[in-house]
Image (tube, rainbow, N blue to C red; front, side):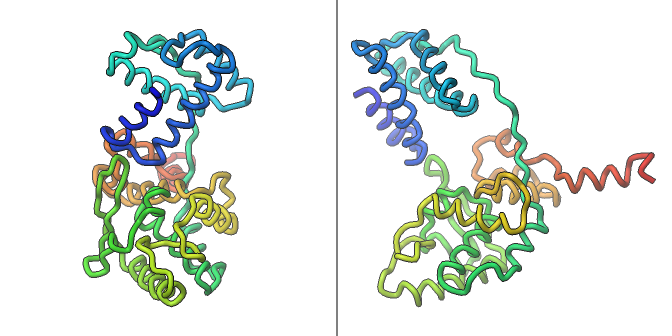
Length: 295
């Protein structure tokens, strides 16, 4: 099947992560299902732009956001480019497609006060789950890693001796991130608790569930979301906001944006520049000190 060949190509030649491949699979399976339901005799490689446009309209009617639709169409575009590369089709039905307009969402990072007030609070219980959740939040903020990178992190990737952690990023790209003393202390304490609690269920992963299994993405998301509800009024409270906070706070404190790019594991500087906006606190400070009518 062409979809499976494409997914194999992403896995073995492009070295895409399992999460990225799963997203492509969902999009293409959904699209192929639409073709079958509306044009039962048509093969996916025979579809034209009229059919794709009908699929897009159906997504709009299902109240799917323009941002999500554009991502799905991007998956299709990559798929048809693969078919061109393998001489399955001569041209892409999406060559003249214009993405749907979407509003630019400015993500607001957590403030340093919000993060410090949470990590210094007594909201976390002293049992295994509480220590695990506090360490997860600290790890996100001190390293800026992605959610899947935290979930798949192994104990062997952490070097207490050299105060570094090895992260396996997108497309199997490795990077080394320094571990600051506060995080180092938190990791050592967590590993001691983990050893006592899971002495009969050893695991290669650094962070594991109460039952000894690999953490789920939902658990990690809920951990960040539920605890930050206690200290922040911001609408979005997700692991990625902590990654955003990590980058924004470094840049606001004068860190070189190229160094931040390496720490985040970005392949291009443009991806890092998304985080280089000045915080609202900094804007207010500049306004107060510089505006002629503020004095």
